[in-house]
Every structure is written in structure tokens, then in C-alpha cells.
View 1 (cartoon, rainbow, N blue to C red):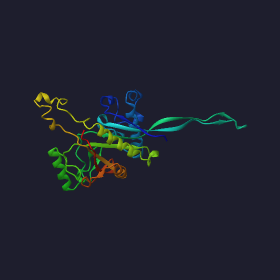
View 2: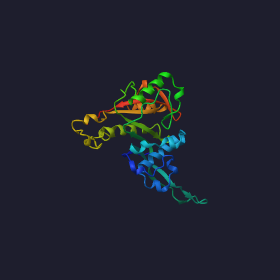
View 3: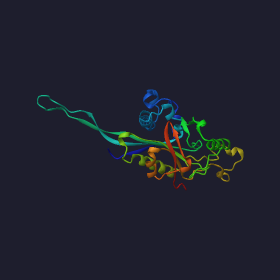
View 4: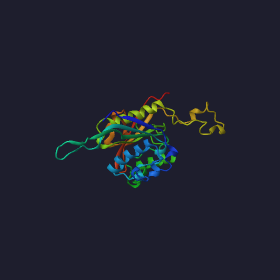
Length: 278
């Protein structure tokens, strides 16, 4: 395997209008795939292999509305592949046709950055399918009460590493093809995503002008503080089996967030902060 390189796709937005989120890439029509950015297709193909085929997550729960507004990263490896086998004469052993190989760039891993706003933190012991809580009746009274407070107040609950108010970027859909695991690929993807946000700290920060608030008498300079501003905080809903990869990249488990299940897979919350002063 040659030295990997990472491609970045900024939020594809309307470019994904033909995409059918209920179908995996292998079942999309050719007319659809011909209009979708290649980096996005490569990311979805990796996610199909890891999450749908390997982890048995339904396609309609894997691909979501956040894909259109996220930054996607895909890591590629240069791999030498045999495209024509050697052929020899059965009697003389003389080579009739030599073996032929070529180097191809193959997508092997992906991750995405989902900008704020986000849904409230999952509840402890919650079971989620397609981001919907499906076991409300099984939760204890304290957890139900906390959930009601969040729903009524419009603010998130406080946790060990999050005050419930600060905006954060969410990393997710980290996936590496099975045959390439154990080589530090996940770490490379995570670090690239963190570095990209450090290089573009205001990429997702709305401005007074862009929101049209000037018409309401809001001064862009005086009232810029009213707009949400990212200050370097990242969050991830990590599968328990992947906690080590996130920890090696600098993430810390948020004990107060507890544990919950997404698509039948146990998760924990983790946070990391980077310098975003620019």
C-alpha cells in the first residue's frame, strides 16, 4: 500500500438532490451517481461496506440529512492490483502472456464534520433508531424528568465536558474498511478533520448580514456577539469498540453523558478542544 492521501469535500448541499437516502450507493441509479461528487460517493461506499454490510445498520438509518451540510473526508491508498494473470504454454512452459498489474487509488476510510446546531445529547440508557428515542417507557424517572426539562427549555443538559450551551462540531461516521484497520488510518482521518476546522474556524459561523438580521436593526459590528461562535469544541458519539482510536486522537470520554445505543450499538460521548482563535 502506498502513502495514503486525504480528499476533502465541503458541504455538497444541493448537489445531492438526486441522492436517495434510503438506498446504499450500490443501489443508486447510474443517472444519480453520474451527478454526485465522486468524493461523496466514495465516502458512502465505505459506509455501506462498514455500517450496512458489516454492522447490519439499515440504509435508511445510515444516510441522513446531515450529509448535505457536512464536510466529508475520504482517505485513499495507492494499491498495486493484478488486472491480467500470466499465461504459459502447457507443454513448453513458455510465457504466452505476461502478468499485468497497475496501481489504483482506492478509497479506504472516511469521516465527516457535522456543524451546529445539533439535537440534544442522547439520554443515558436510551435506545435510538434513526436518531429517534424508542425506549422512553424503559427509562427511570430521573432520566425522563431531565429529558422533559431539555425539551421544554430548548437547551441541552450539562455534562462533564459540556456546559449545555456552547456550540460544537460533531465528528461522526468514522469508518475504515476491514482489511485496512490497525494501520492508523482512523487516526489520520480524525487529525485531518481537526486540522481542517482549525484552518477554517469561522467556516460555519453565521453572520448578521447572511442571516438578514440587518433589516431588524441589528448592527453587524455591535451585535456580532449575538451570533453563535465556535470556540474549538468537538464532540463525537463513539462506538464503544472505537473509543481507543478517538482517545489516541485526543478525545476524552464524558462520564456524565453515560452510555446509550444507536442502531443496537453501544455508544459513549467524547469531547476534544482545539485552538480556534483565528
